[in-house]
Length: 276
Length: 296
Image (tube, rainbow over all chains, first blue to last red):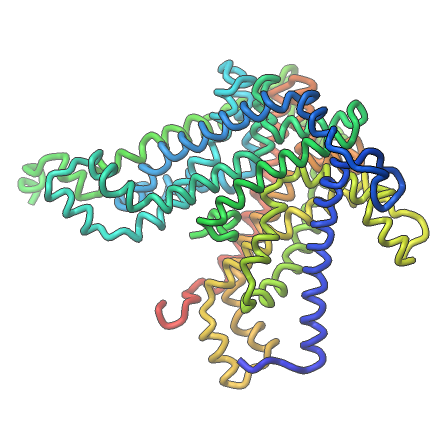
């Protein structure tokens, strides 16, 4: 198409870029504030802090018991990733390959936990988990986090599975493979990129999942994001720089996994989850 | 006919309808969702009609007679609706601009960062950044745009800004993914026939995009409506930004009244759902055909 060179079109383009530039500038300003503050000795009423130090990291590490928090976080996250793959991938396979009565209803059942926000379904869910004696410990947190991640894996995997030629599976069946062997030798290798992408997305989302963990976690089952919330909530008890050091540790953890995930998925996939 | 039908084994008849051993693989996931999504919902619904004191409707009566409680609906809508409309109005033109851009991936990667970091970290960052001594106010003072620092924290605007920071990328990336599903050939055909940019947008792209935008609106609205951490950390949780999720949380974990908390959660769900249903019903009136050109 011919590029529009009229003044109004140029002004409009400029306005668009100005909005996006302003947004990114403030986003980076916000992140840079946290990072700068975490290395600051004293920072009051000036552009930059009076001096630089790394001691807030060691004090945050001790004060917030970050070793325990991080190990709990990763245990929860990896359990969630593993279990949502284990439950989600076979279900996605069945849904991609078979048409059965009530399939639409089943799809709706898997779409709803992604459309309803976590805090809405989290409160009744937490009530049930507390009554069952599971909340307040790691198993309850894992179960609560699985509620949106299992459907997420299913909905991400269905298009991946539909791409695979059914003739390959038919050939395996002809040579006498049962469903289990078919999964291990045929589907798993073919689906590996899709499974990896889906599980990495689950991982990134679970590290940052605040609401469900917050509603179900006890003192020994807090993940990093919930510990950060409590630290910010009780601000004034600890030095701001200490909280910021913890925030930087959280940021590094999340963004590291995001970078790994982005090698396998498109950024738009992180939000465009319920797309048909 | 009926003789031949009954002589076929049941397993084969089921298989013909798509039910065989392979279909059973979906069962664990269904049971899981029933146990941890559907059952808690009905449990909560049931519990909300069994209040600590009073008749079956006591919780709902209490909610709608106490302005401290029913006011949260208006407070939340007053935050969620402007944010959703604003982010959508920002996202549409920028998505159009970006869709033909060369380094699109760099921009989408930058924009996915605030979504990944989540609302808690954004809240902590904004507490410093927007504060009276923060870089934002400092920059405005230096440029001479303001004479005293603007108060952007612990009020409506703090929550609003944090919702835009996490909401805009979400809306933008969704809009972009819908926009990339529209075949560029359709727009080129319009251009060949002499349509200007505005005409192409109004008569070709917008009608094709509207159903997707309706979904985007719903998802963004529901996200903004369930705002919790930033309303507590950046807002004034006792007053102007006492959103409905704070009311539900306080009932459950400060008053330990799970029955009341369930009632508030149900009301929250109903408000969300009624807006979503209204938008989707309006979407039903729109064009819903192929946007992929000749391939259908």
